[in-house]
Length: 101
Image (cartoon, rainbow, N blue to C red):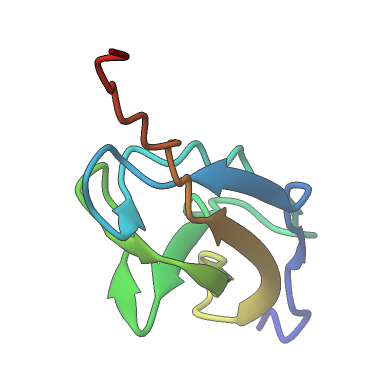
């Protein structure tokens, strides 16, 4: 019986900008967690944000977002790792055109 936990290393932290005209970012590139285990098979690492699996439509709000990566080996042993995605609000400058007389 396999009782050895798999290992997992998160991808590096990244900073992204918000989507246009909203206070969140979607389609955030998470990278890939590296995993290993003493026995196979091993399932791919799954990233979650707030307990929900991250997809291309996941909304990363402005500020620090913690992504939890979980990997499970063929014997049901799990390991987790966390990383952060910082979403900086992109504020575009406002230009006012004024006619000079």
